[in-house]
Image 1 (tube, rainbow, N blue to C red):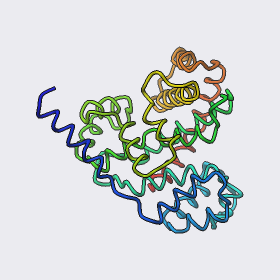
Image 2 (cartoon, helix red, strand yellow):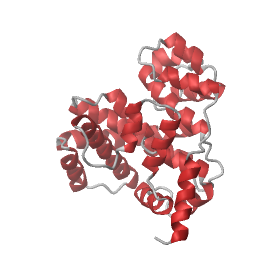
Image 3 (cartoon, rainbow, N blue to C red):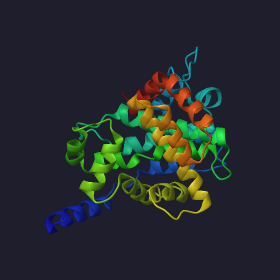
Length: 288
């Protein structure tokens, strides 16, 4: 690596340290969604500090993904009758990060594609955790981790819009390609960028560690279970979106995650059948 490239990468890494601070309202919302004992009434009151977040959550509650026959027009009803407390907390976290890291200056960034990848990974992780019953991986945590897995791409779109645009112009939907190119051009992975964001914004250590250690070895047993779940969920997501998955691919995913093949194929087929509804949910998440 030549000296100019080294300096360029160093300057990009330094720029990551200048990520914007969270507004006070957003800090309160993050504190509430990460409080395991928060009551619904308190959560509704705090989320209401952000009209944009309320509108997005109501849009989600009324989306085809949830198949509601009657219009849901207040947040309390949306939480109690449709979304559920855990899901609202996870979705609020994702939407809030999206609002704070507006990717509009990155022309090639496809918000719907980003949330499609994030949601399929999240829902798949949740279903795998339900199927396999890992000792140290709850379905709720698996969902939130899946939703946050690619948040570093949003960081890149926000801080380095032109450079990321150059990567996305080559293949905006191939996240294997995007992942490799970001690491090559920026000197670190988008997982590390996401980790820096979560650390700066003081999100729970659990989520920080998940991103910081996603592609590392020597994990503890607790971390290894979550890591396997997320890697399997990510690869199932890519297989669904590439539409070229073969049974041998799914078998390899099952082997590497130390999961029963039947569990992987069941989740894969369920996600494939529900792909159109998830796409509609992704549109709502991204504000499309």
